[in-house]
Structures are given as C-alpha cells and as structure tokens.
Length: 379
View 1: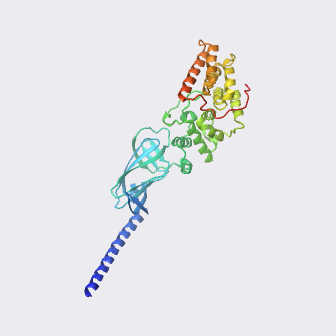
View 2: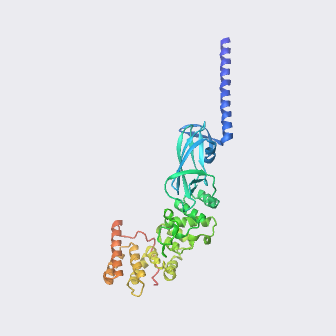
View 3: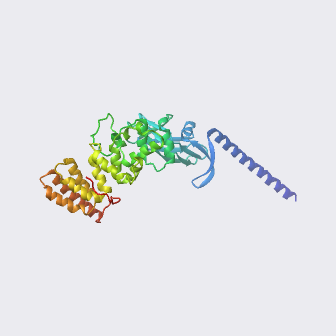
C-alpha cells in the first residue's frame, strides 16, 4: 500500500515537473513573440507548431534572418533567406517594400511569405516593378531600403484587388505615375509620326498594346484624370487598340464605342482621322467588317487618284481579312496593276502572304473577323 502511495507521489511530482517545463517553454515563446512579432500556428516541413510572424525588414533589422537579394531591375527580386532565430518563423514581404541597387529601385507589388524552421534556408520570389525607367536591366545584388513610393500607393492598392493585371500593365501604370512617359516610350508598335529621340533607352519597358490599355484602365479606375497621363494624348493608341483583336473589346469599353457606333468610328477614322494613321482604319474594316472590305478595298486599290499609301494599305488589308475569297481578288489586282508598278507588286505580295496564311491555318475560312456586317460600303 505504501509502495502504491509512493509511486503515485513520484508520478505527481513528474507531472508537476513536466508542467513547469511546458510553462517555461510557453514563457520563452511569449517573450520572443512580444519582442519580435505576432505568433501563428503553422506547419513547417509537415510539423505543426507555434511560429513567429515577422515582416522582412523587421526580421532583418533584428537579426532573426540572414538574407541575400538578387533582382533583375524590373519585375523580380529573389530573396535567399536563412532563419537565425531559435524558433520557426514566417517571413512576409509587404507590397510597397523597396529594394535598391545603386541608382536602381524596385518596389514589391504583391505581398509574399515563406515559412522557415530553425536554421532552415529558403527562397522567396517577389513580384516587383521598376520605380524609374532609368533602371539598368540585368541581375544584380539588391539591398532592402527604407525609401517610400507615395506616388505608387494607389496603384499597389488597386493591384491587390485586381490580380488579373499583368506585370507589363502594372509596370506601365507605375511609369505613368512616376515619370509620365509618352506612348512612344512604352509601346511596341512603331509610332506613325516617327520615333522621338530620348536621353534614355526604354526598350526594356515596352509592352503590348493590351498591357498599355489595361494600365490606362487601371489609372482611370483610380480616378486619375486621362488628361494628366501623357500616353493618352497620342491618337495612335486608340486605333492600334481597336485594330488588335486581343484588346478590341477592352478598347471599345475604354473609348466608349458600342457595336451600334463602331462602324461610324471606322468611317470617321478613314475620312477624317489623324493623317498619319487614317489608313489604319482599312485594317480595322478588314478585320471586323470583312464583307464590306471585300467589296470596298479592291476599289480603293484600283483608284489611280488615291494616294499610294492608301492603295497599298487597301491591298494589305484585303489579305488581312483572311478570307479565301480575297485570294483571287488579290491575284486579279496584281495582273491588272502590273508587276512593274509598286501597287502591283504589293498586290502580289499580299496574295502570297494570304495564300501562305490560309495553308498554315489548314482551313479556308476567316480567323480574325468577328462578325459580318449588313452595312454597304459608302466609300
């Protein structure tokens, strides 16, 4: 009986000792989290437990992690992190955090986090955008910066709610806010008025038309006036966006063009558009009103009083319908106009292009015209 009592007493003592150990561990964890940051119950490598949550800059300042940062000067920074703390950590990089390398500066667009056990090493890839178009593009070592980017805060907030925004669109919007670059500095299409000379090469920041339009749509949603954004002033953007099938629908919405008013838009561009881009309307008509184009464009190509620019554009646009019916028309025009003339050679080239394109498609039907129109040509 005494042996049972003794065993029970010893077992109770063991429980108390174990409880003290638990309390001490809890006290240590509480003190550590009070000093370093919040706590969370998370899993590291399959093992669950309490984990301290730290912002990247706080963790680095307190020595809780060792870090190396490599960026490309534009859209990516890779953070190579090692946990130097006694417990598990969750390291998070917040949107708006700036990294610098000499005169280069990039800002984190979307928050990202990584969980690290004690002495564990991991890599965190951050989506960034350049703060300035003078950034040198190429891999380099970056450091965490305390710099702020107040001009970009509305964009970062908007991007957090619109994850569909492409890196190119975000970067274009950022440069519009920080430097107000003209369209010629960011567009991949050739400016109709010719390339403007610039002190800086912005080729690394050129994007597709759909990215430019998405950037402008985002800026408008942030209630930034169109008139304050330089790239909206260039009339070429609207017609380039309207011609491009990938952003045609977005362009109609941005420029408040409806299906009922679209024909009037193309007609207006052709008859009274900017001189440098007026003939671009022929390509839009070819893509979105192919029936009208098949009737109208051969007449434009045949008219000797029409400018050669328009006649050649009409021939190229006829091929752009990607309709099999356009092929015999182009071959006939090549014979009529003669190979010894510029427009005759253009007709032959357009016919060869269309023939190759139709063969490549493997079908004899249109690929880019979205709808037919019952409108009759008025030109």
